[in-house]
Amino acid sequence: MRKIIQGFVLGVLVFALAGEGLAADVKTATKQDPNVLIGVAETHKNLYTAGGNVTVNGNTTGDLTAAGGLVTIDGNVEKDLLLAGGTLNVSGNVGDSARIAGGNITISGPVKGDLVIAGGNVNITGKSSIGGDLLVAGGNVIIDSPVAGSIKVAGGNVTINSKVGGNIDARTSQMLTFGSGAEVAGTINHTGKVKADVQEGAKVGTINFTQLQAQAGAKKALAGILTIAFLVKILAWMVAAWLLAHFKKSWVTEVSNRVQSKPWANLGWGLVFLVAIPLTAILLALTLVGYYAAFLVGTIFVMLILAAKIFAAITVGFVIVRLLNKPTDGIPTWQPVVIGTVVWAIVGLIPFVGWIVLAVIFLQTFGALAKTAGNAMKE
Image 1 (cartoon, rainbow, N blue to C red):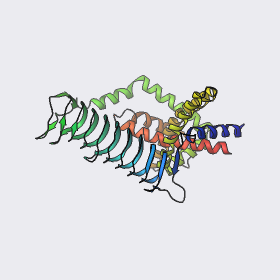
Image 2: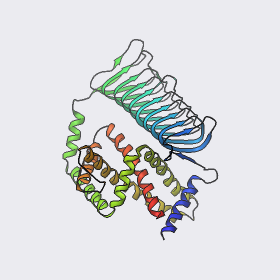
Image 3: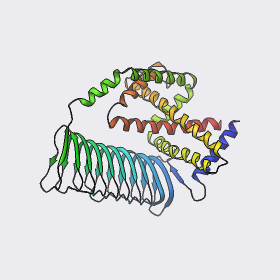
Image 4: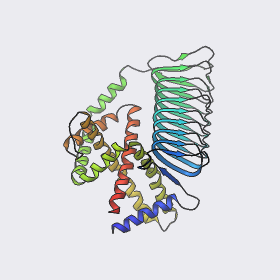
């Protein structure tokens, strides 16, 4: 039975990723070399890649999905770009939209579609251009590139120093600055602690300013923690986490160790499976005769998503326990279960930064869980 399930899963993944006209290339780090280098002479179709340091100098036809500690994209991408990692640098052309999340992000190449970014420090240089809308959240955000559409931005310090064809909706905890090169065609709505700084030479109209009440975010987060619904959610997560830790100790240990030993490689695999499994279900459903299999794959996907969140919370607990200098052999006990679930829920209440952190940890855990499940089926 296990071999049948294994063959079925492998078959549908091949169908999704390697079918005629839907081919995908996968290049990840190995034990011998933790880094990935795509040479300038290489051309890949629908490329998925992950490693410690990932450098893509060649062109990609179709979509490019990449993750790593340091990711550099110098080659051109025909369609969509999906990136996640620590430090991300994009100088190649993106033919459609880009979705990027990381610590330090620099965009210096044109994006013909929409650009969605979440990061600590975000710098969209004057060498770039955005053909659609820009949605960005970060600690420090600098926008020097022209944006054909509208901008929605949330961050600490935000600087806009370019032409914007549409509207601007900005929410800042520190300062919004319009540089001398700013030229905004649409309306500007700004929510912040202080009014925007408009430098000499900037061409902006009336700024609709809404005062951000001090400590409003902290009060809202505290109110959320004290609600009965939040406490019930915490208890439910603890029960689910304890059940997993009790009945699947080996899985919890292996997933946690995988995430901590190779976080960026697992993040890359998380992105791959997050795209591949739903795509498999869709393709099976389109064949009509495969709708039962599509339902099965979809159900497995939902279960993996739910389980990955619990595994992620326990992994956070393991890390915190070790940081507290409490010895742990990786065997789940009540401490990482309780600490992890509480911290996971509280971090989710932090505006902007909270969901970015949780998304990264979730993808890392999702990738590790998928690989652990695959190894279990091989045994």
